[in-house]
Image 1 (cartoon, rainbow, N blue to C red):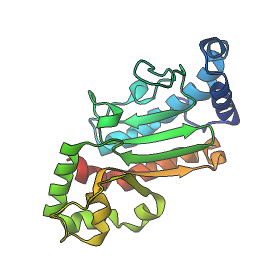
Image 2 (cartoon, rainbow, N blue to C red; image 1 turned 180 degrees about the vertical axis):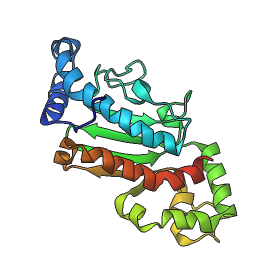
Image 3 (cartoon, one colour; image 1 turned 120 degrees about the vertical axis):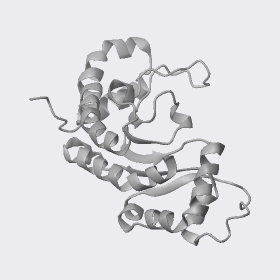
Length: 222
């Protein structure tokens, strides 16, 4: 029987915190075994089971090791020259798309918190124009999706608003305007109760959130 995800551990956070204070190649190489045991191994175990739920939402998602972020940072075009990340994420997106340019699902873990969500993380005009066109054509369907009580209780809407109200959408319900008036949007949940990540129940929490977000994903992506 294949090993199952049983949660992360205090050593996971301890490693990430120490890496943040010792962000250099020598230290990382001296502690690579800890990274593999306490970060990479449980993350890959989680991804393997989480991917089953992700693929039910969209069979086109890229899964496996490709869904887990690399610990190495690409510093070529960044002012931050730290060679390693002090956090990681599991992200589901279509092949041949960048994290910044796609609509996808994610789980992330930082030294003091964890989170999950769905959406865009930078402006994508073509995607948002298509989303607004669908909102005008099917407002009742979108309204039903974004006002689902469990969804609104668990996840928060984020993104960047236009400075001026977009014309032509005045007739849409008020509850849809926060989605319409954004250059991009995402739903997310961030939680600082890291002890929740020490148990297998974390997997079920994230899967449940993915399932709640699935109707909006299908509306926006298809």
